[in-house]
Length: 117
Length: 111
Image 1 (tube, each protein chain N blue to C red):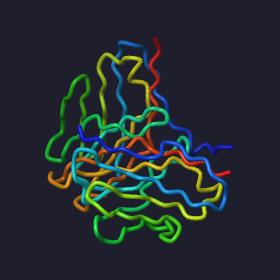
Image 2 (cartoon, rainbow over the protein chains, first blue to last red):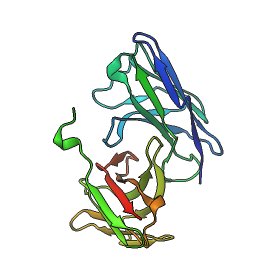
Image 3 (cartoon, rainbow over the protein chains, first blue to last red):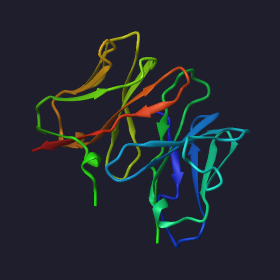
């Protein structure tokens, strides 16, 4: 199956700092990537849809100025958590869909665990 | 602390038995359904999918059943193994290609 990677796997940072998370599709091109957040013992909640070459689409309640998304190429999307606070501590997961396959399923990255002290 | 609503339902089965995990979906316009397996600290892993023009699809040791009348999806795992222990999520997608996840079920396999 298609492989999606994320970097870093773990981040521990002080409150107020900004953290960038990378999501890469390794063996396919992805016009669209998705960013999810998952709190302990909960399901995945979609934060935003990242579109290559255009602005991201954010879900209701997600602050676009707080969670900056850049999808600069067909294989890379980045999520930057700006001025992170302890309540932003969570498991952030990206997914990507193969642009060349219609209605192809989303493949997920391994996730990035963020802990804000 | 956690509130009651945040506890995942748990299915506990004996190794070698069959497992059935159920999911109710909400959007009658959804036409694509996927089961994902998520192990602790990892991202969801695709298991099997089914489109709305089918009511059953089989994979290796797994079967997905779709009942559109009652908006119900199930995942059957044959001869459950310890490595199957994980949280299982169903997800639904409509023509807008947005994926919506269910709440998840924790499968525990007893040796």
